Length: 159
Length: 159
Image 1 (cartoon, each protein chain N blue to C red):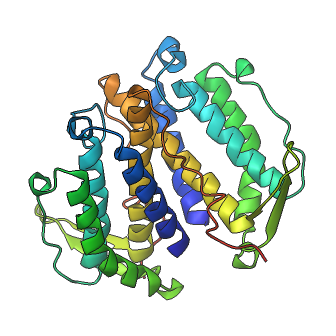
Image 2: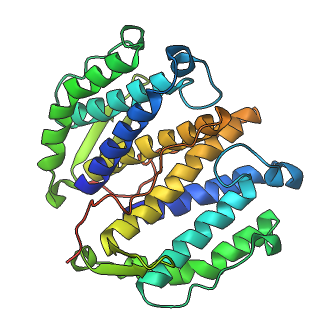
């Protein structure tokens, strides 16, 4: 599980560096698909990652508003602020948690039960999916996207 | 590991069903980003998934040509043909394989070493990334994309 989180964090940092070449108006420009802009995509994945892990732990997941994070530096700071909580949970993960039940009482009265293992993979896939969207927007801008490769990043050192 | 493969296969089937509403020319139309068309994306992820797993096992990974698979039904058949090989390897996966070395001798004389665990995650992330691209193309077509949610699919039944 940890490997995929480390992968996402590395790719995310590479995308931040990629964004440095773009003016703020391009980072905020409305685009088709996803959550609608490059910068809002980062805000969204940081928010979703942290919120889901807070929820699993029964901790408050205070909703933040993108209106307060409309610059690359503000988004990076938001990420730095939430990362320790996320990292602590990910590093403490063990396989005995896979089938723990997360019970969600929806506003319509229905009850949804997800396993913790599903939620963790949901968070992982969520970010990869949104990075795929960024890669199309990058090409629309005439720029090469950040590589989505898992290999070549030294994530698991072979024996 | 298996959970993510099952997730990808479920989402892939949902995208195939989604494609049924589109004329073949839309499935083949050149698009910005990724491998350039909806149908070629499926061909590519099926091919990459099977090829990597063949390579790990030291088996031949005969290159196929998309020119022979330019319909939704042909792509589905291609998928059905290769799936048993992929499924057998994924179901036989165990954590002792994580750090096994895959040694790749590149044509430029360089040697690249990846762990099997990295390669498996590479295959998983590869498909999720490309589905993210499809989701943008879907919105450009004015259609709702297939959900990328991992939760809600019954992939891991909670205790």
